[in-house]
Length: 253
Length: 318
Image (tube, rainbow over all chains, first blue to last red):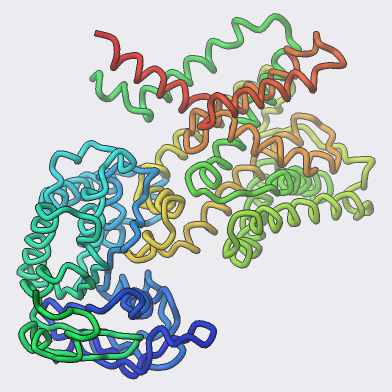
């Protein structure tokens, strides 16, 4: 059984093969990590899966349906959400509103009731506010519930993106370097958040350079190099792979 | 109770109603009603335009075109076809809405300067059509318009127009506040913040941009219709490029993403030329100087900058 299947996926940027003939599958309920040197095509792969780029060739299947070439908001409706390596926060809004936008698909969005602010819209908004507050607590941002997004530190914004993505109630959550730029303590906290997300039944695909985190929490690891699959398997298998050690991990100190 | 009054919806609307209600007491003469009606009309257009520009982050340099279409639509439907003014207003607004939808879909895929150019083009095309289709529109000579009437009541004086404009402004501010604070409004603001961030949580960004383009065009059209009846005479120049720029300037000056800011911007820029008349030949220079000064020292616009200043004052005060 697979939730996400990538089949012979390729993306060419002006002669450069950012992703080349890549295939893999993600089992529901697992944490699936993608690692590799800088420029290996990890973020491009994320952008291909989530509909931001259109693949040059190959297919993406999500929950059994072919979703190749669908736009990100259509994929979100099917239950896919993500965070970004370079933050995509709504800095013109409050932290709570950022998470409330994440809940967009599950709200009463009809025009006339919104325009006239009928009681059901007020009620739905109040419920949304409560959900968003609970999600901010879940990712450890209780103290920023009343804050403007623009006034929050980098580490907190990383978690705010996770809360926003979770508000969309995804079945599959793709996290692009959630620990990048964080110190050791913050990394560990993110680590815990990701594990709690996985325990709540959301399948996680993770791109990360923090090897301690990847090896500690992943069920499955995929190693990319120059856009191609270098190796795949459990953390222990990957760590033992000579090619992976040469290309990325380096010899143990 | 205090919390309720402090929210923009009740506190701000109440204050606005009070100002609209009491302002005529300060009018020195009947001519002032005429200026005040123009200020109210501009304010309604800006409240609509601010949804698109201020909240959605999408520029339009063609809204005077939609305003003019509303005006000409009403003039022709009442004058030639004998439709009741309210029906003509609604029909014009619906037609403008459909037009905005049809042109909005392709052009709102553009961003920044390209979007500005495309909307500019729409405004200019409308202006040229109104000017050259003289058999229908009277061309540059203009067109006279019947007065506005509803059932047996005919609006004749500027004083009556003032109360109509005031009522319309309160309704549009209320609607705008509702939109901004709804899932729809949050999605729109999210588009401004990060389009891609909004897409990945399921916001169909194109849809919301087009939608607000249509809403703001309908606001402009409705006001255009009323303006035509009030002025009794319209020329294609109400849809000129300079009018579009003026509308955008009002929104930016008053404060982007602030409904009350848009109202303030519209009122100030309508009244300033009157107040600066004493400078005679230098009027335009003084006006330009004030606008440059505001943008340099208050880049967020008047109202948001002042509110920020006030908040800081309160924080530092013991």
